[in-house]
Amino acid sequence: MEGENQVKALLEYNPVHKKVPVLVHNGKPLAESLVILEYIDEAWPNHAPRLLPVDPYERAMVRFWANYLHNQMLESLRNLFICNEEAREKALSELHEYMTLMEKEMINFFPKDASSIKQECLGLLDIQLIAIFGAYKAQEEVLSKTVLDQEKHPLIYSWVSALMNLPVVQGNTPSHDKLVALLQLFVKNNQASTLVKHRV
Image (cartoon, rainbow, N blue to C red; front, top):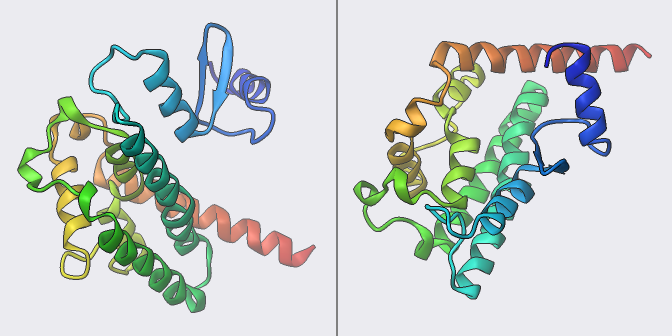
């Protein structure tokens, strides 16, 4: 689908948020990335790898931290790209505080050895980390700020680095230059939108 057909389909399948991602299964649409991932895990219980643990407590904890990553850290990262230079340091500090808390409280979820991470065993938290920090080098180039600091957050850094080295991730990740161009376009469009609002 292209152009108007894409817009029409998006409005039809996700009339609330009017944005991707949207999964259509058996003619029924689902929106929001976390909802889609959990649905996939439950709709195909025999698939491998399982995105969520079988144990109810571990499953609940993964859901908790997945929501933390989505609602706190992803939102803070997004703010870095939409705020002005004056507010950017505050936004970066907030993101790093969330990362510090994550390393402290989520210690049992971190891989004991980064080399143990295999693409056959990727879970919900792995996917969330790739989505948020997989483009951290491009993010840092566009922002001229350190987003993922190996010294401040060694656990997150090693986890993300190991994930980004997996062939399945590398094969589905846009090039660095393309990521930089997309982020620059996002910043430019946001600045233009903010300027229009101020003129109205």
